[in-house]
Amino acid sequence: MTARQSRSTQHLVTIMFLFCSCFLQAATLQVPEWFKLTARLDRAPELNQTCELQADIESVIGNLNDVQIKLILPESWKAEPEAAKIALIKAGSKHKTVFKVTAGSYLSPGSIVVEAAFIVPKTELIAYFNREMPEDAAELSETVRRWPDETRRYTDISFALTPEETFYPVADDMWLSYDDRITVQEGFRGPSYYEDPLITAHQAQTDVAMFEKLETYIKSDPTLLETMQKSGIDVNRKLYDKLNGLYVLAVKAYQDNSLDIAGSFIEQFESAINTEPATAFAGLRIAAGNIKGLIYWGKGQRRLAEDTFKKTFYSNRKHPLQRYILRNIGLLMLSGKDTATAAEMFRLARSIKQGYTLLDKESEMLGKNR
Image 1: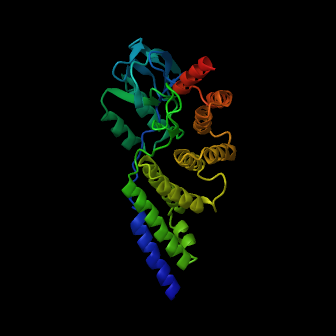
Image 2: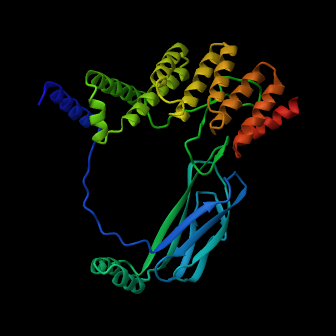
Image 3: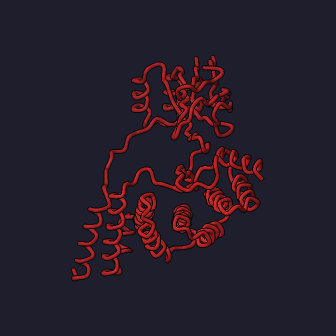
């Protein structure tokens, strides 16, 4: 083994220790899908408003008898009906149940659980195993025989409902933080920004330092990157962790009003992401551009703030996060008494996504004050 190969191996072992945990699990024979339970809302829930929840249960193998469906709701939420009973769902058929659900409280995150109880068609399942899966029939049949005669199965619907906005389905385009230190006009919240709810400043520093160590290894041995990729190490994910770490540190500094320090972290972020494709890490790019604009705004540099917000918007105009950028541009315009441009920015932001309750209210107030 050459010195370079030895060094590569040592580096790889170190990196594997830092980044990877591998678990081997014994293969388990699974009972094939014999029913399907799904649920969805017809629209995003809103406080004190009623929406429809549709629960579908399908029998794939065997008949389902004595089916009972009920909802497990958040506290103070209501459903009509409270439960539904179906005598029989024949094999190969589907039954739809519709509930009227009224939201009685804010929740972020929130969940509605759909519970379905029914008799297990053991005889039909075992007959299916013997006919279609004879080599595994004995083991699968014994598994089913041990099941209770009645089963309860669940599916859930995730959402988020806040005083500012409602989210369904839940995706990665949720900014829940507002900087109310910046007051534009009475009745208006401050500009919005993204704050990672999971990563602490310490973890962010660790993620940045670990990737910088990884970069040092790669620069010292050009073959290491390919070796890592073949070993299943997701280097791109580690780069994301570094970028997100820099963003988290910038947000922490911004919240502490350490604007120069926050700007320094954003500069490091931009330097690190500069060599990546323009479409990579789109959500994080928009969030960082937004914080950069807020830093300028916090320093009283309104023109630079406006230019930064606009550059962030035009970099990826169709991204759903741009509703926040447009709203922030509108607030910046409103702070300069340009109500016409502010109203147009709000209108464009509202067109991106329904359920932005705060923006709807602010648009209404702006219309009354013009």
